Length: 595
Ligand SMILES: Cc1cc2nc3c(=O)[nH]c(=O)nc-3n(C[C@H](O)[C@H](O)[C@H](O)COP(=O)(O)OP(=O)(O)OC[C@H]3O[C@@H](n4cnc5c(N)ncnc54)[C@H](O)[C@@H]3O)c2cc1C
Image: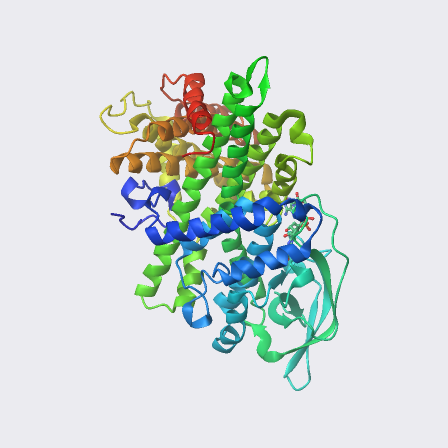
């Protein structure tokens, strides 16, 4: 039985979470599993055998697939029933996003742009009339949505857009003029969420704009590196008159809408890497089992086993952390509703609470997926470089994940920045724990060994210390620079790397522990967790050193480096080669991803 986590957004760095407080993928209900299976069957039947059509920029094919997902109910999974959707929970919507990604590339982006940044602004900020008018059409797939935020001069700096919305003298309408760029689904969209600035407002404002309104025109389809059948165009607005009732949320409130839609977009992007990973691993294992060199399947070579095991480990950890956060969000939404918030407000605030985790997941999952696709190409050898094999397009398709929904640099800085802001507002007690760590540095280290009877005692003890390493580095950096630390991007990036590894490590430990508590065998999951642990400790040590050398000097530097060494010291007798081989041998025997 799951106990709701009392660990709020960002608090994982100062609090301990128990295994019974996290959700793990082994706990998906029958209904959720059926949704996942239905999605996978659709991808296997309609998409996977026809994937080559994506490469030919067959936008009609993408559109027909989107329409079919609408008929299956997959577009409206998270839309409440009164607006024509299935009204399912947050984690179920993540699960569908995950399985759609098995198609890799174009469909996933088109689906994400429609259900995420297309539908969500209306779902989260629309008034009743707007929701009744637009959501049923979007949930069924009768209409396809697009989201127009980026401009030629406003990418990462999204609030700096130049698109203008001029109110009419009678106040009944706005005239929108401007240029939007990189708009997914643009070629076949029926509705655009458009962000524009009214007069000299500080922030942009959101509008719902219907296709066919006079003054909208499109650029040519972009010639992209990958995700080729996801339509991406510039959209031009030239005196496009939009009724005042199509203003979304509040005037001057568009940046908030954009950012909140992106919070969801980020965690959904993490989900949207998952089935792509599984399929790449399965294709790689299958290829390695069938490709013979030196009179044996290449799967029998240690160098290949090592790759397969790391691919599986990276995916397993990504999946673990993604669904942990997804369920935390779902629980938080339920808790806000129980406290009397409207379902709309609860959905909004539930995700906002875990915005730090959403950014962490986006970065980690997109980088894990890039690694997995890259090694997939390598296992295929020369065939990996051929457009005839699926690896080549997977490698190109995955590259975008590190760029959109906020680049990984922006998201890295956001994770630490949001955490510090929460601390400044008194919502997260970072200062107390950071000061305790500072004090601990001056004391003689404890030589107590972790209790050998506790499950994952060494890993948990190490996790506690890794959190201290982060608190030491972040705490000292803030002490030195104050809020100007935001200008010290190299330090923030290093701190973000530490934070991401910690969240994922904790998630992995808790999943393995919970699988065991369910009475199931978790030996290979434990192997993967331990592989991740060893790599995470190395990364945290290296990122910590990078940060310390960037701002500390003299005695302070010496003390901090000694502290880092202490906090990243681990005891183990893990033979990494044997552990990787065990994981790989299971994949090879099953001839597919199987965890
Ligand atoms: C295929 C595709 C589909 C897209 N779909 C949509 C869509 O549907 N709707 C939409 O509105 N947008 C969409 N985008 C736009 C996407 O969100 C932006 O490309 C992204 O936010 C980055 O903006 P930019 O391209 O202007 O890069 P820039 O902002 O110019 O960034 C360039 C580099 O500078 C770095 N950088 C920028 N600012 C900082 C900073 N403050 N500190 C440190 N480094 C920084 C970035 O991390 C990056 O490495 C899409 C883009 C692509 C390629």
